[in-house]
Each structure stands twice: as C-alpha cells, then as structure tokens.
Amino acid sequence: MRMIKPMADLYEQLRRLPGIGSKTAMRLAYHIIDRPESEVRQLAGALLAAKQQIKLCSVCYNLSDSEICEICGRRDRDSSIICVVEQPQDLMAMERSHGYKGVYHVLHGVLSPLDGIGPDNIRIKELLLRLQQTQVKEIIIATNSDIEGEATAVYLAQLLKPLGVTVSRIAHGLPVGGDLEYADEMTLARALENRRNM
Amino acid sequence: MRMIKPMADLYEQLRRLPGIGSKTAMRLAYHIIDRPESEVRQLAGALLAAKQQIKLCSVCYNLSDSEICEICGRRDRDSSIICVVEQPQDLMAMERSHGYKGVYHVLHGVLSPLDGIGPDNIRIKELLLRLQQTQVKEIIIATNSDIEGEATAVYLAQLLKPLGVTVSRIAHGLPVGGDLEYADEMTLARALENRRNM
Image (tube, rainbow over all chains, first blue to last red; front, side, top):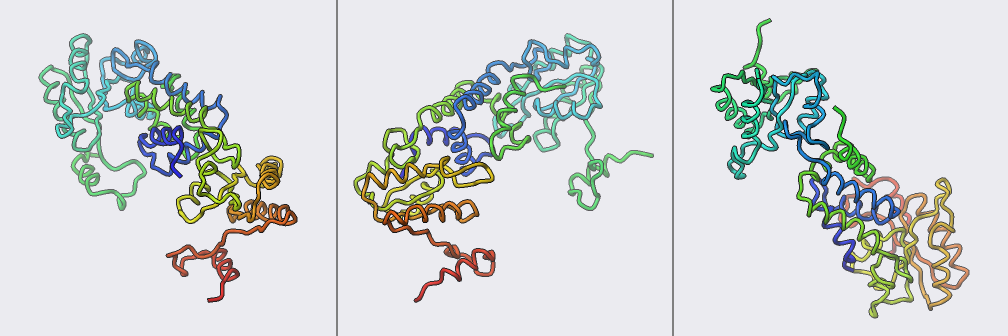
C-alpha cells in the first residue's frame, strides 16, 4: 500500500527539515493528523507569521520584528563596541552570558570559497558602512573557531585594522569547569598558546 | 534580550510536537525563517492539507483520502479475514511485510482504564457492526504486546468468540535474525511458551 497523497506530501515537507529523519517525519505526520484542526492551523500560522513578520534590524542585521532591533534601540548599550557574529543564534548565546554591553553585527554567514560564499555574500559591506557612519572604538570578532570562521576573522581583521579601529578576537581555550583530561587536542593547543601571565 | 514575538510563537508551537526538545525547536525555528517564503508556505500548506483531506475509511477506519481506503477497495484482498491493529502506523508496518492478503480494522487506540479509555472510546462497536454486515471467517488480533495491547486482545477475544468467528493472535517470539543471547527475558519466555513441534 502506498501512502495516501496528503500524507506523502506532509511527510516530504517534514523530511526536508534539518535533523528530521524519515522515522521522525513519519511520527510527526501521524501526530499532526491526530490533532484537532485548530491546533494544526496554529502551527501553520506560526510558521507563516514568523517568516513574514521577522525582518533584519537595519543597523546590526539581527532578527527583529521592527525596523531597529531591541539591542540597537537600547540606550544602555555601548554602540562604540561592535561584536561581529556569524548568525542571530550566536548573538543570542552572547546575550545569555550577560557579560557584554556593546552592540552587534550579524554577518549572516561566513566566508566559504568552496561553497561559493565570498565577502559580497555576507554582510561585510554593511559593517564597513556602519564604521563610516558611527564612532567605533573596537570590533570584537566572535566568529566560530572552525576553518571558515577563522578565515573570516583573519579577513575582517586585515580589512578593518587600516581603518584605525581596534580589532580583537574572542578567546579560545578550555571551557570553564571543563576537565583538562577530556579536552580535545586543538582546544588544549589553543589554551596553551593563549596562556596569560598571572 | 527576550525572543521577538513571532519567533517565540513559532518556537512554542514547534516545542509542542512529540520528540522535539527545546534545542531542536530552536534550530527548526531559525531554519524556517532562513528559507524562502514559498518554501515555508508549502510546509504550512501541507500541514493543513493533510489535516483537512485525510479522513478515515468508512469500512476499516484506516487513513484515506477517499470514502473507502485503497486496501478495502481492492478486489484481491480477502475480506473474510480481518486483522485488528491499534493504529494506522501498525497497518502500514503489516503491509510492508507483504505477507497478508486479508483486510484490516483500525481501533485507533487501546483499552487503557488508567487513561480513561474504555471500549466505547476505540472502534470496537464498528468492528462488531462489520461482523454483522459481512461474512468473516477469522479475526487476527495484532495489538501490541504491552499491557494495554494484551488487555485489549483478551477483551476482544472474549467479545468475538461467542459470535462464532475464529479469533487468533499474531505470534510473539524471537525476532528473525535476532541473537538469543541478547533477547530480553519477556520475549524469551514468550518464545519458549509458544514453541512449535518440528
């Protein structure tokens, strides 16, 4: 017996979501046709509303439901320090640490020549424009420490330093509370390299 | 920084799906606002279409997009043998074995007094009605072998036997290709109990 069409369509759609394998997609599809229509309508509505109402902040390109995002709109944030992150998720992670009082710039990607993503495909131009328009003292580059993230960090540093702005990179080393014994070699090498005098 | 409302709504909706934890819901939400609107529209549409177009077969209560499901509508299926399953998923699993040529009856649940599910809450009445309307030789009870499934099987057997129909239960034992060494005790006990002469 083949799957009936509306079921097969739903399964196909769910299957495309990241991290949803065929068994999960199937379970979700059966769950959905089991729920009252009002509930399914709410889910479908939330999907469309999120897509339609969420835009990017015109200053930092963070996700926002208004022209300027909550962070850029706040008076207690220091707009002379900009932390550059790859994605909105990274910004949220930084905010959760409650340790940062500057503002952000979301690149929406990293340089990845193999995937055809060059400087024009991520929001680097917009960062340069921002530097022209506002007084910026320091730029903290918080891209990930994988190959693409590092390459992007180096590229940005070379681009920004000549403009007379301090460019820094967030520290990499052992996670706080982490066991030396279980640290991977790369992290350990980085932690040694970046050791500080006490 | 709190999550913006459309994002929080979407996250809440995704979070309610079975097997979707907070991290997965977050990842899915970010994925969705990253996709083109046409794609999100397709997903939302598939959700609603599945809910609205899928109904239950008027004979066996399998999922169907027409009055009578594909299996009940086929001439090469023996309608005098009915296999009783808990859910449409179980029917699909049986079909995948390609070993069964009878028809089905989907209960849409099992007896579970603790959850307040009695004989009137699952499609038992409909099965009895079916027996009155068509000539049935055998009923194979293929509910799961957990407590509720077993209880439902026993209940059905007591109900159906007086009607002069053969009632059987699918076999439980060692899975084919399974190692005796790794079989759980319950399965092993069942396999011994149900041993056959060679």
